[in-house]
Image (cartoon, rainbow, N blue to C red):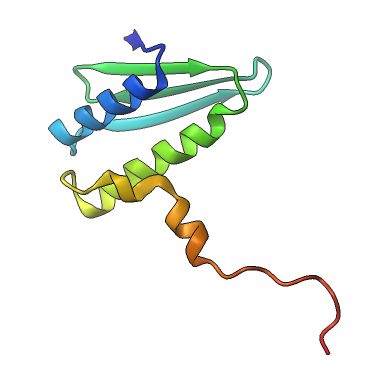
Length: 103
């Protein structure tokens, strides 16, 4: 098991691992509320990559990684992950109106 300190390196190596063998690669998240620690693990039974954090701001990074893996799993390992940032989805949703009464 390899704990990777850099988030960008973890994402890059995780995507490479998935693209090399998409059928046997697993992505696991584990959160311990009592410690406030989040551990992300990507493995293909031969190589295991782990990233550990206790920073709340890393939850957004985890959401982006989820979007990347959802894109790769649904569109195939050769899909363009530049679209998986999550910003496109937020822009497509219409703005919500206020909570006032209908007139």
